[in-house]
Image (cartoon, rainbow, N blue to C red; front, side, top):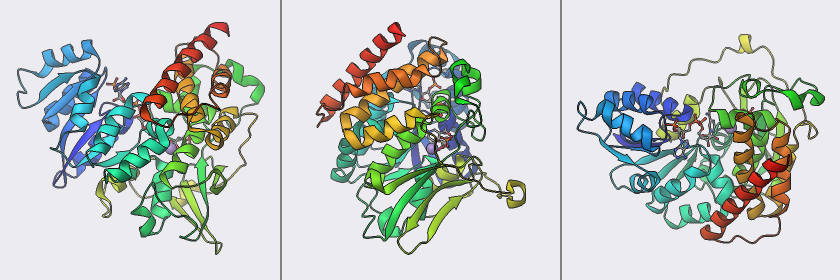
Length: 396
Ligand SMILES: NC(=O)C1=CN([C@@H]2O[C@H](COP(=O)(O)OP(=O)(O)OC[C@H]3O[C@@H](n4cnc5c(N)ncnc54)[C@H](OP(=O)(O)O)[C@@H]3O)[C@@H](O)[C@H]2O)C=CC1
Ligand SMILES: CC(=O)[C@@H](O)[C@H](O)COP(=O)(O)O
Ligand SMILES: [Mn+2]
């Protein structure tokens, strides 16, 4: 029986992970779960799984949760605050950690798990984008195994030879006969809209992803294709790839989740329904396979698979992230930070959809030549980039 901790248990990935655990009660139990504001989902998690520990990072949600469940559920300790995310992640009492907090808030607790040598199932791509070399060096030093959960990186992982699967973060792609890695992306909800109309799109339209059901932030990232840019950087670190080793292909059906092209001309693809329970089940059970609740792929319903070249005029955020990846760690940290600020401003109707790129580009260029060799300097870049992004918002 593996004991699992879920950071971000109340979110989209968190709830899919809960469902995979629910369907495999002989294999997994829930040791700890964390959330921010959603106390009612957390109350139902407590009632169903009786985890040992729960953390809420929002004060009001913590108080409401205690009111709701404390008398009936004394087996679960309920804690408050971001510091307790790190404490729970560093606990000796569990086996594997699902990192599924959205954004930079996931970095410190994920690093806490890594420095305890835990197996980390990584959905929170922002933490790796922010801190690349530090994250990967810590995993190597503390013998923490990272298993990708992001659907593209799970697909690539599954298409790699076993030797490379065993050394995520330290893969030797050339030695494995790999020509390149091909990231597929749907192109998001606006892929068939004229670029001149993107100024006027609403948050509700931007979060309506054509194929996947996800949290709001990543849904907007898919619409700008910043998501694919962040995934480009994520792939660089997970697979020890250079930017020249990575391609991006727009694939509107989201059936092929990514591919690996070998030097002999073979291209291995991982396919399936667009349902995150597949990569979650792959990660939790690795090297075994389990049923996480995803049904058979019906090829006759899919009909055809199509591919397009990414259009950098429509998706300038993708180009910006790829350029940042080739430029410096500080620039990728800054792109990530500015993007978080801009996406939430767009969701709050404070800026236009097309302003997301403007804010990110303005901020990122200021950090291209900054040196950020350690965690402290990474966190400083993150803080400064957020401050500059907020001031860009005010002059738009
Ligand atoms: N959704 C998907 O299909 C995919 C997601 N990912 C990645 O997984 C991560 C999670 O995405 P997703 O599940 O969609 O996001 P959601 O917004 O659905 O969930 C986010 C989770 O993080 C918690 N949270 C939010 N802010 C904070 C904070 N400041 N401190 C602590 N916890 C916080 C939320 O708590 P609460 O809800 O209680 O407020 C919730 O549990 C992201 O990094 C995303 O890029 C990767 C691939 C696919
Ligand atoms: C499910 C998942 O992994 C998301 O990152 C997904 O890929 C988003 O869709 P896009 O391909 O549109 O970015
Ligand atoms: Mn993805």
